[in-house]
Length: 156
Ligand code: DQA
Image (cartoon, rainbow, N blue to C red):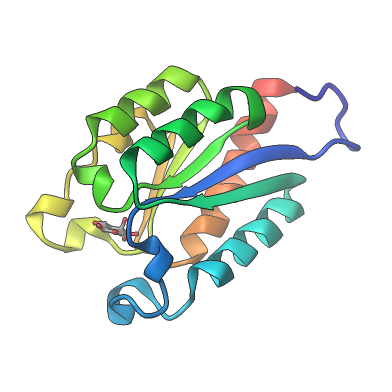
């Protein structure tokens, strides 16, 4: 944990769940035309403007996502997560986020509340400090701006 204000870059985890590796070609009318690589670059830039370093990861596997969340205990000051479809199904991801005591901002590219009823509930939202949905890839920039505030509050 950094004590210093100006000189240290705090690492945050940006975690994307299943099927988000297909961004750009996957239902672009819903998820946009940007690739995951472009979203990751946007996240690194947005993080840098707030004095953060974004460690961007993606997995299609629930256990790998859970391991990454556990890693955040020692390696990251906060978490931005788009759990994809696991938002709606995974109590295990919810429990992992609750266990690591890090600020969490949940992101969805699409407005899940305007879509099918099965997408309206996210298990993750109950343990997230904030939820941003429907803002497309800009939602990640918004999430990182808010996470920077939360991180500063917690560790300075
Ligand atoms: C999503 C919304 C989920 O319902 C869906 O399963 C995804 C992406 C979003 O970013 O809008 O994979 O999390």
